[in-house]
Image 1 (cartoon, helix red, strand yellow):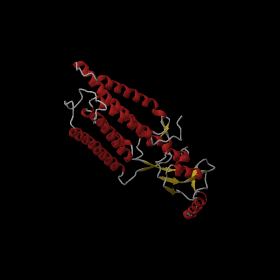
Image 2 (image 1 turned 90 degrees about the vertical axis):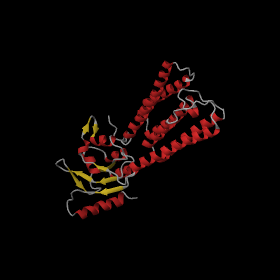
Image 3 (image 1 turned 135 degrees about the vertical axis):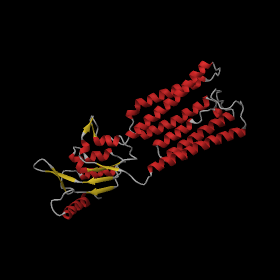
Image 4 (image 1 turned 30 degrees about the horizontal axis):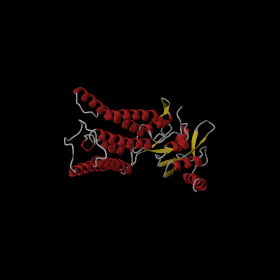
Length: 327
């Protein structure tokens, strides 16, 4: 049964989480295929086993992520967690394929780009900073002979002992690449998000028809990105369509900048008609409280038809709102 209190704003992020997991599987499968090819070429490099362990661990982690995905109450936190773990995996891959000379330092860049598609700017720069720290620390340990990177056929250079100037140059070059990608990703993401206009959708009763057990309004919000489409709930039409206006306000947490306050009352011939705020069947105390908690900024008082002078109806609605809904 569909839960009317469940938020519908996370579905686009759900797709991004799945995309992140799919991308990880593609990259790690590429590495696995490369190792299989090396096996058939008879390459004598003795360090395939550590990389194989990293690949297997990554597969297992991704499977676990997939199994617990439906139980995650906060997909953005879940996405961020996966990106941080990916940075550690990428560090292990770099160490297992030659350290400073590894050809897989670019994997850090993939995590930075992944962060830009679903996380705020501070997270993008946080990922870039973490990648820089992890990579430079790994290189430092390598150069100081505290740890020894594993030789690998995936290295970019043949020299066994790099000079200090080469280490500094290579490290700064890669760290610069991390930050350039972070800045470009952040710029592109913000350019798309901050166009200066926000599209909102105003519902009527028709959207409460059901398709495959879901209302059309559910589908509209589930299949759209909250950054591209916001909600403009009309309380009268939600009620008329058989929905709960307060529940819909809670469902659209963070996605409801506008709310149309419109009351309705039943008639003797089993129809519904418009009336002044507070004169009908809707519980506006609960509705406005739910909307405020959802982040609503604008409340639009509306009445399509009036029994007499519209200004008399406006006065009744105004006095009710001032007495009951404004603290």
